Every structure is written in C-alpha cells, then in structure tokens.
Image (cartoon, rainbow, N blue to C red; front, side, top):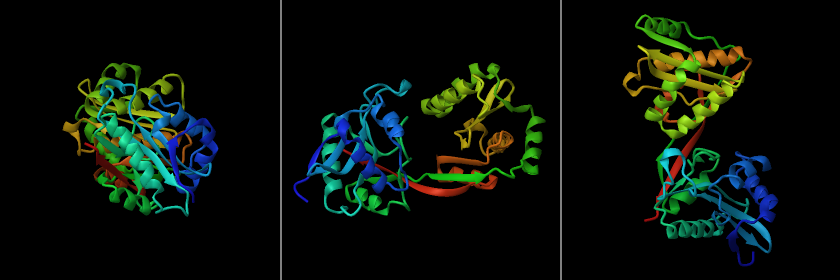
Length: 314
C-alpha cells in the first residue's frame, strides 16, 4: 500500500464504506437505508467524526464517532461524552496500523472538543450493537485493549421460541397470589398514561421513556403489533412490560418491589399476548447478565455476549 490518508467522510464514499462495513462486520451487516437513517440523518452526525482510511482512492477502513450537538431529552448535551458506534478495516489489512491511525485521529478530535470519555458503543438512540461481540470479533477486543480501552460492562442478547408458549402454571399461581393482595396485571389503558410515563422516567430514565412513548403512540393509534402490560397496586404503578412484534422489552418494576415475581408475571403475560397475535419468537438485544437469570427461567437463551468499552481522554 502507498501512504494511507485519513480524512472525513463525503457522500461519494457511501458504497465503498458500506462494502468495508459488510466485510469487516460480517455478523452485523446493515443496509443503505439503515445507514441513511441511523448515521447520516442522526442530528448528531458530523462528517468529520466519520473518518475513512483511503489508499489510492480506495476506502480501506473507517471509524464512526458520535458526540451530541443537540440535547437528548433532559440528559442534555452530555458535553464530556463521545461514542464510537462502528469501526472496521478491510479483511486482510488488519494489524497494519490502519485502525490505530483512525482511532488516533478521532480521539484527538474529541479531546480538542473537551470530550473526556469515549464509550463503545452504547450511544442512544442510534447504536447498532450494545458493544463488541466477544465471540465474533476477538481481534477488535484485543485492538481496543491495546489502545487503553477497558471493559465496563458485559451485557447479553437472548431469544426464545414462542410457537408452543404457554404461561407456566406456577406463574399463573403467582399472579393469583398478587391479585389477592390488591395487585392488578392488565394491558395498558389510556387511564394509566398520566402515572405510567412519569413512573418510567423516575425509575428508568429518558431513554426508556422514549421507547415506551414510541410504543404507546403506535398502540393507541391502532397497531396490533404491540403488547404493553402494567402492574398496579392501590392506584400506583408497580411495573410495566412492552413488546413490539418479536422484540421484547425493556420492562421494569419499582425497585422497592423487585425479586418478588411481579416482573415474571408481566413478562409472561406480554409473551403470551404476542404469541396470540401470531408472533413466533421473542428476542432482545441486551440485558445485564444478572437479569438474564430471570429470562432463562422463562425460556430465553443467550445468543450473543457483548463487551462495552470505555477510555478516558482527560
């Protein structure tokens, strides 16, 4: 190769960049439509933070960085934070310094802006994966660790078949037990909304609020692809659960009421309703390993393991 050039992305790079993306991230391919929606049309996208490595006019690698230009709900601009949501080098050209030069340039740019930390890759709302797949991309793990990134979390992806799903008898008994103590488990109603959305924001934050609001908007506009269940007691929201088509979650229970089976009842009710609508699989992209035990009891199995990385720049 001749001298490699590191430069910002421009519109004519799209086909070549996506070709490298598909080859380097073969377990996580994307379509041009997804690239347009989640990258080019993201309000925080800046071409100078999507760097490409070019050799004789040919794109050999890329790194996609994001930093907030507009606030994300009440979380604001998060001025100290930046994210890398995807990166890759053309297969066969690894370990030749291409990735290192891309990251050096991007890290220097973020540092000059006053960013203090980079994470890979839990940027919301437009992340592609929760982190680096530990099994699919072992070389990426080694590369990041060599550059001073450390693992801060290890979530998992899970899925389960719904074709023959039935709510277990022990869960029905548990629901009856809680009902006898004044709890209700019902599909969401419009009367729940004034309490439900503040409950989600208070206990789970604005990103979960955004997901719930999006699902509820579709549901109350007539969608038959969404299940949304709410648990209440004495007029107060105790927990909720949501599912769109085959993608489950997120769902949550009041921290003061966890580990008592309320979440399991909500989970099973949601799965059963989606099965009745003709969906045959349930999956989610990430959950903490500690929470995975609840899902395993229901029938979910781990299908991918992730490593979320972080590097402090200051």
